[in-house]
Image 1 (cartoon, rainbow, N blue to C red):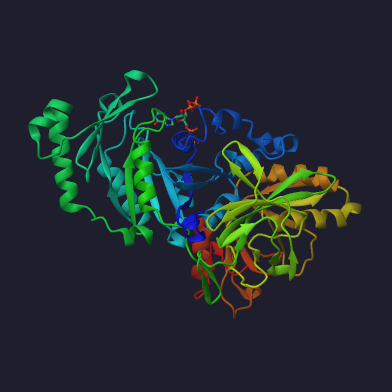
Image 2 (image 1 turned 30 degrees about the vertical axis):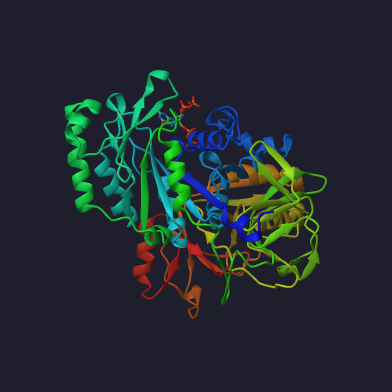
Length: 531
Ligand code: G4P
């Protein structure tokens, strides 16, 4: 029987972040293949299926649990127990995507080698950087014409302010892609795509100091280029430092091609060696060690489960310490109640099963009759900790929402408030105006449709939605100013969220700067940590 410590030490929990189409789904699928968790490609919900993204969410109505499938996947590989957290992209992009990163211990950033850093990666990176979690970079699609690898490194370093450490280095790209050179092991992993779609990766022991050997393997031109590149890298780039990797200051970089399954396994092996075991978590003044024998967890995501009759939901929890046992009593800190978690479940690749036990690092989904909120702590009754709040992130799309039938005011207010509590949308009102006008902010536009659909089906309320021209929102962080006395511009508006915090809506980033200039000392934030 493995000990608690052994079980926790073999866990690796990470998220894969990318801009849509960079290859996140393909890479995830290949990782699952290595874990033997799936037998063939095509299982992970691909782009083809999510093309009906509007209905993607509504599909949940019909197939309860499909979204759970894509929320977290657990599989075994070489003695490791791996949890991959999905960060929905495409039209599903929402605040949940950000919050998922709160439950991860590291992130793998997939970048399309021909495109470099793209907007969604930028947004997700910011959240990872805020937590200082390790970030690994997989530069994908090297079988296609890619940007110069040095330019890609520079992009990462200047845009993200992190160092890069290429673990391997590409030899050509596109039609001339010959593979990668492993800098430490000093061998070439040769790319041969004659197998069509499934590349054959042959390991050839040849270092950059063996010029003739290299000429034989990759030809004179590419060999000379590689020798020059490696010399430059060894001389001028960052040195490998695992502490810096763990602080999120240095990103190990790997080149490959997920589609042809090239470079994925060496990536996985190196990644598992470098990425940390489950991290300790802050709970006020305390830091909770994952090895603590008492169980503790926090809720990072709530998924409406669409059973209209019951309004039941699934609450996703990240276990922070100890071991969870389905028969155990747990203490729900925010409600001051001791209870059993009902129907705890976990994803084992395709299968969603009720689980008997889980360990620090794992994610479990539990049935939620409407008692949990994002950020709640559950723990062993002996423990009584309260984990720090999960921040709220700035939405980017805004609308004014009014109910069609004024007699349904009560249902309307209840509906928007409950949906806001789940964290799918943010709602704001004008100060001292009650809930006459409700401003809704969302991270991804799909959430507007979700809101409309849910208000109608669950609360029987129809709404009129007017899109607003705001693009930015900031929380006011100053404690001792009267927000109503601020000098705003005509294209900005002061509002309050449902917890009473003051925010300002802005038409553009320029308006943010303008208002800041008009009000020296005003502290604005894109993230609200205090809630
Ligand atoms: P995402 O989850 O990040 O959105 O990306 P996804 O894996 O769905 O990949 C987006 C497209 O890029 C897919 O093509 C996929 O096959 C392709 N792709 C992924 N990795 C590589 C790679 O290493 N090399 C090349 N050449 N292509 C890659 P699609 O035609 O849009 O979809 P599909 O028909 O293949 O499903």
